[in-house]
Length: 51
Image (cartoon, rainbow, N blue to C red):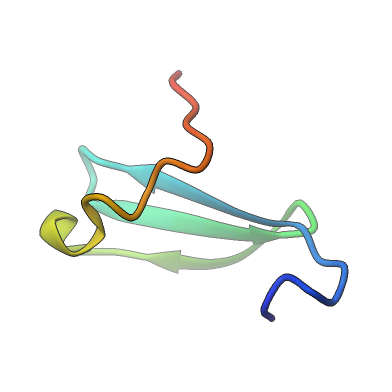
């Protein structure tokens, strides 16, 4: 899915847990764990939400 097919993709990153949830059209599609934060520094920030 490259975002051109009409899908809404949301990436929710948890810095404390070093994990992420990926939602497609509001449905949890996948969970990623043990993310190396150094790999995504500078590549995240198109939209930031704080809770």
